[in-house]
Length: 209
Ligand code: SAH
Image (cartoon, rainbow, N blue to C red; front, side, top):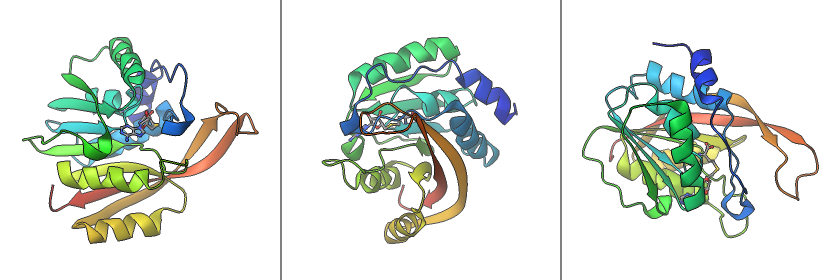
């Protein structure tokens, strides 16, 4: 298996959002964090020969990271068609031959029912914006429905919520780790150029998937 830092280097070419939308909480995952999540999933045997679904894929960072680690196929879902156009361009930059479908749909009501063993990787909206509250909960509900195992990135302090959601939905949190996440200034309401927050990543096994 290639190293995590090799994966980070391969993902460095992935472009972010042209015009990020605050209402959709469009924050791109940095290549380092994406490599961290995908490498951990690969080490756990959750990528190779599986279908990998990236909910709220944006410009494809996590989907493309997974595509570089030998899955059967990858599906990236987002409501923003222009982000998916960038994701398709990023796919060419990354240069993977893995079959990838870009699906323009609401991830909380996604038309997905994969017939093969499926892993979800996602950095969903945190549900912090008006009109998008509890988005993280709705994305986890989709992960519970379509996958046997999911990896999700959350903002710091989500442990109680994630544990409780998993317990209520036939899920078990098997791993959790913290990773630094630098968010570049991209919206007017940010007053610093970058903000450092600790992201939390959870691996959840879903019984019902
Ligand atoms: N996962 C990407 C983008 C994270 S930002 C990355 O790792 O870089 C969150 C993404 O969720 C944005 O692309 C936004 O367009 C998308 N999104 C927000 N609400 C959504 C919904 N209901 N259904 C699908 N995608 C959604």
